[in-house]
Every structure is written in C-alpha cells, then in structure tokens.
Length: 247
Image (cartoon, rainbow, N blue to C red; front, side, top):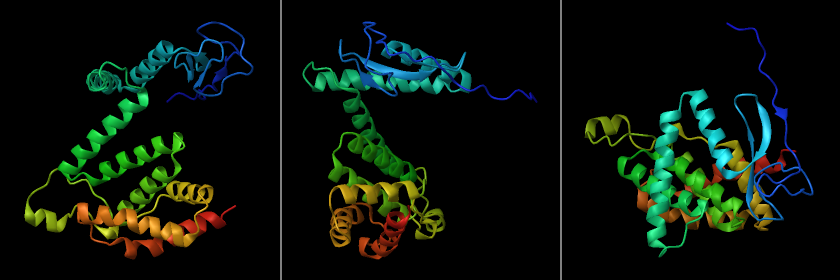
C-alpha cells in the first residue's frame, strides 16, 4: 500500500474565457456564461495533474471521460452519453427541429426512468428519480413545484420504498413487499431543503401540512401506499421543526 498522501487540487483557474479569451470580471467558481461571447464555461479538476481549470464544454466532456476511465466506469459513461444523444435526437424531432436544452434532456430521461422503475416496482430508484426532478426544479427557482416534489419524496421515504426488481411471486411479495414502513427514513438534507423552501414561500406550518396532504393524496391513490399522508405528516412535521431549530 502506498504511503503517498492524496495530492491537493492545484487551482489553475484564470479570469479569462476559454472560448474568446476575453478578461472576466472574476474567476469562475462554477458553470457560468461568458459576458462577452455568451458561451457556457465549466470548472473542472483534471485527473492527470489534479489541476482545477476553467474549460469549454468539449474540454469538460473530455475531462469527465478521463475521470470515468480512472474510476473504471468508462463503459457506463459511454452508454449514458449515447443515451443522452439518442434523447437529444428524439426531442429535436418532437420540438420540430429546435434543439432541446440540457434541462429538457435530463427531465425527459428522468420521466422515462420514473416510468421504468414504477413498472419494475423498483421504488427506491423511483424515489431517487423524483428527488433528482426536485433538484432540477429548485435550480430553476420553481420553488413551489420543487417543494411539492420534495414533499412527495419524503412521503415515499416514510412508506419505506424498496427495489423489488419486477418480483411477481405472491409469497415472496408478502415477505418482501414493495413498500414497508418499517424501513421508513427521512433524509436530513431533504428536510432542510423543505424548511428553506417553505420559508422562502412564506408558508406557515398549517399551509405546509395542507400542501403535503393535498399533493400526496394523489400519490397514495396512484401507488397504493400503505400509509396515508395524514399518518405521515406528524413525523415529517417533527423533522422540519428540528431542521428549523438547528442553527
């Protein structure tokens, strides 16, 4: 075993656009548009020298592929990249020739994943896809739809989602049901986001309860979950209160 300590990333970012090479008002800290040429710049860490750099989209994709090679996940990377490109072509036809945005592609793939996981009764994976959709909505500042999605995720979590992989044997399903409240949990990070969004939307506790129940009544009927939303609310309310009281 090597005793060499992991090398700290070297910051080689510059306040310069990697496309037009014009000076920037500040060094980019994340994905952002150049104020001069309008191109999207990315911040990445190269695997070879651990240098943090500002790069173009093509360079960012090359670095991501290099990381996939280093981590041994290159086959999965190539498969996912092809899936994204196939979805881009599908959406372009659907949009009558208009190029879909990265958001359009991601949202469409998550919708398809949700349907696939639901058909296979892989409810843990379904829950994760719904969480990712909430993250997209939050980044787009669609606060109320994002809050509804996170409340749905918590409702699923409190029903104990499982991945049963299309299991159909009745005896095994009784032993390993697709949902089991004994496996219930609440992710602290999700609870913290719910508290923050409720504050931004100026929702008091009664309003948040009403939103939770109204949204998840439909989920309960559609997925036949073991616990009704009213039974789950007290647990979620306690978690939100704890998150709110935590400095």
